[in-house]
Length: 114
Image (cartoon, rainbow, N blue to C red; front, top):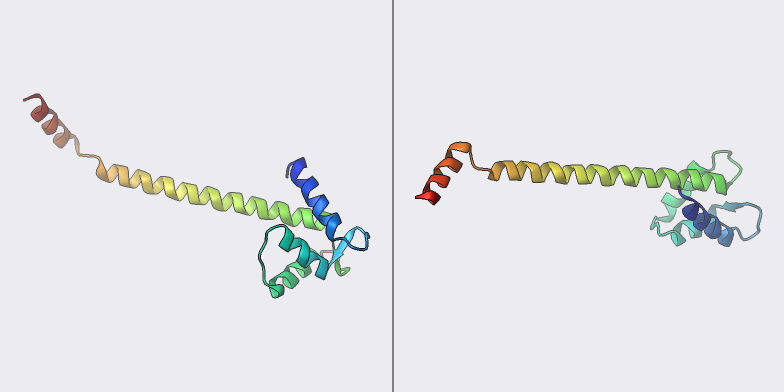
């Protein structure tokens, strides 16, 4: 993640760290995730909070949040790359299918000269 993204995350994190203890509890985390634009059901947010709470202290630290966010960004970039690759393959197949065989191209070229 670039410095600007980390600073944005830090600002959001501080906003939702109500008791200023350097960590957000599960309720604060749900609000934080929502403010970052992730639309998840409460059940999924609870499961995610449990998953991110790697030290099992009942809170999510900034370090845990950044590690998760970085993983999300990398996964999205990989999905986008796969999507773009699929589109390129499709365009290549279509253009090959539309390309006329050499004998037909020569015949058409002869007609154009005639």
